[in-house]
Image (cartoon, rainbow, N blue to C red):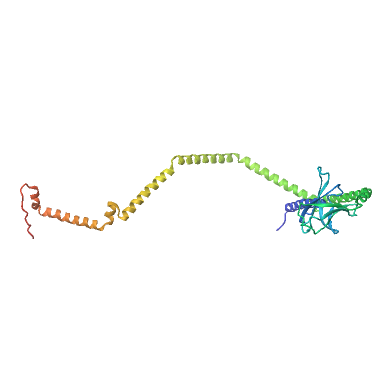
Length: 310
């Protein structure tokens, strides 16, 4: 996959930001990748800087994190960090001593194994190495020389940065910035094109929004009408009716009631069938022998006579 110039520019910018943050913290004596615990100690005066180190038996194990003057006690509270692997007792002492390098000073932890282990945030007892103040007064004379050397180093660094900025090669930073400017112009042209499209179709967009508004109003009215129609009550009434019908059909199926017995009672069916046959025979007999039934309508008793059989 080919990496575009825009991606290269973004990577370069992010890398520069990361290096700036890392370098700034490194100059302050902080390592972002080192796990550490913070402890405190107090002195009557301040002879340290944020770049001072913390040592154990001559080995660097931490850095000074913060130096704060306590207005209540009149002492200087120093916060320092050490590697979390370092374990020591709360009875250990923190000694202020001269490093001998450019007249700098540092802290040394005099480890003690008595008592419980110190926890991050504990305040440790401090002490000062004998002859430190005299040594500090002698080092003030060399301050101007050290400052001059520092300024020369800074000038050299700025010169090198200037060379990078005015580099005319393909890989130079100046060319990269120019490409980034061209990319921003392309985005600007795209935004202008989109603005033109919106302007040309302003009427269509307005019409679409009006139609959508009308549709929304119609849906709202329909929803209100359905709510006022009490569809829920109608459904409940229909459900109750279906329940009654289901109960009626169940009773019929179980043979309950007159209709149920008529449907399920075979004896009643047989009786009805027999009565029907007898009624049919009676009607047939009345049709064939009407004189036999005249005695019922006559005031005189007419004896019953057997019909002649064929």
